Image 1 (tube, rainbow, N blue to C red):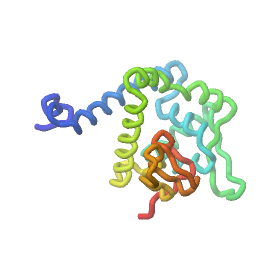
Image 2: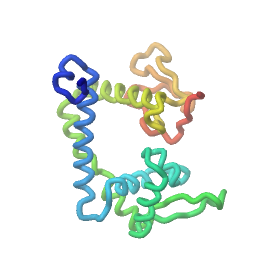
Image 3: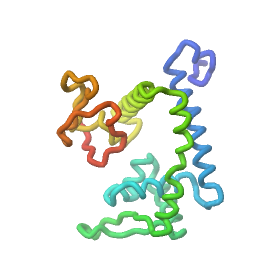
Length: 207
């Protein structure tokens, strides 16, 4: 039986090694997330919701949007959100321009909590800096973003607000290899380091 997680299968497969490496990193992320929520009475997804709400505008902060962003069912999201509301960390409000639409916002207590939680993954950065050169980090970022874009095109993930999936983005414009990309919304070249993973101005490519 062939498996990505069989060390013998991994020997001759770069793809298996990459996937197994990402899976191993996911364990590290879960460990860091659990360590951060310890003693706070929060679940991992509640921590992620609080941090998400802290950094995204109201139109991105609806239950339906959270379900898409985190690839969860609406009942699962509603349960987690209602728990945060009961804890006094989140509240619902209607949009002034459309009173039928409810959005989620952090309370003062929720914002304080989100600020405390927002750096839960910062512990990984020193290891990136130690292990990889600047060019290697850029190459890793580029490869991961291209992979995520392919997953979105394949319908494996539902949201990828990155340059590679945006209608304003053009690849390899102009001869300057230091700025091999172009954003037609910003109307300027972009270097590899300037590519965005979560752009609030993102507009998807036409189907």
